[in-house]
Image (tube, rainbow, N blue to C red; front, side, top):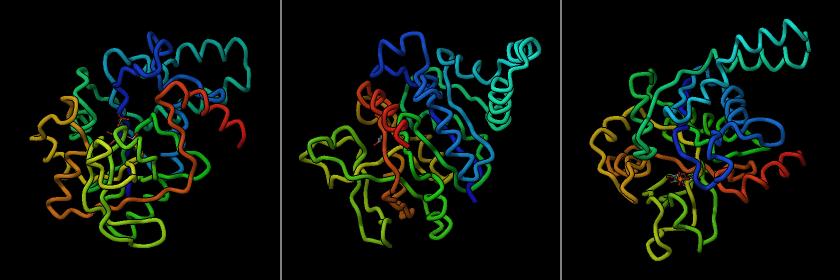
Length: 271
Ligand code: G1P
């Protein structure tokens, strides 16, 4: 069973400037709700009990959001507003599940994952990249099911336009397992169009094995000088670790870019 999830939140959010100049992008509202709460709700609904946030000193606002008890208590005592009481209860529920670790230097997603090492108890855990919202169908929940069936690592996958492959991690697939699931032969971080093995992209949901930590410990910086989780995954695949690409059925919203962020509120309003 997958019980733990990790969420890297230390990024600067430069693609959303000026909105992120003083504000954490994961707290920006999407149709009246902070983006991070959509991610937390997906985790809870997928059976996750324990969540690790990787933040930085510059992103402490995220911790403050969940630890603002005295403020809520004061307001509730004064106003007794049932809506505020309900919202506070929801925050308390999230808070109980979340631990915080720090990544103060932006050395890449792989480095962020390594920071959670001492907290991971089971053989596999879930990672969600908060820029990637998937609505209408719980992608993490479907991936947990696949994991339980095949006892393997699982990553979300989506076809992208060939001209855009250099924005994503790109899969080379080995064979079809069933309707929406494929065994992965290789994965490359942000390849050029010429080097891309396909147009199937990695989307930010991963069920990873604990053995990834050993790989990450000696992982050399890759594209752009960052330590990429994709490179560590690649190295595990080369060691015959089984990874499955799951073609998810929900709708993908790229909240990490300005146009995607604007569109996401409109899309959610239609549900
Ligand atoms: C990260 C991963 C990339 C993946 C993408 C999905 O890139 O490194 O492999 O395809 O998330 O959103 P980033 O968005 O951090 O540039």
